[in-house]
Amino acid sequence: RFEDLDERAHQYRRREELAGLLARGLRELAEQAGQAPRWNFYKYVVSRNGRSVTAYSSMTAPDDADLVREIEQRLAAPR
Image (cartoon, rainbow, N blue to C red; front, side, top):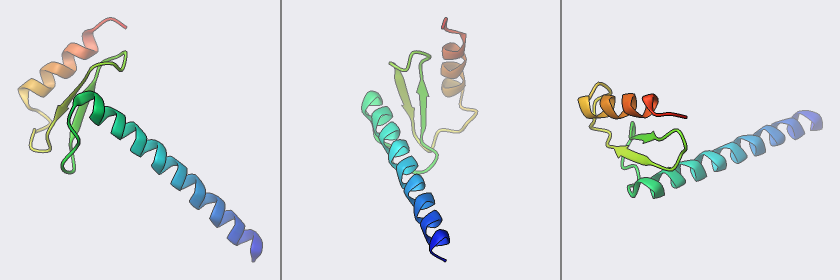
């Protein structure tokens, strides 16, 4: 049915728009950190005001002492 095709096309456009927004957001984080992600599980720690970004590679474990310390410091920072 035409209505079904029209709805699927609309859903596809919405997914495409969302993917574009996410890509732009990631590109902005990479530019602020001065380092683009090289692989899956790349980590960006962002300050509360969104101005300071630190990048951690995919090889950094989620429980890495430096990563945990930075997250805790940023969470403790005033809003």
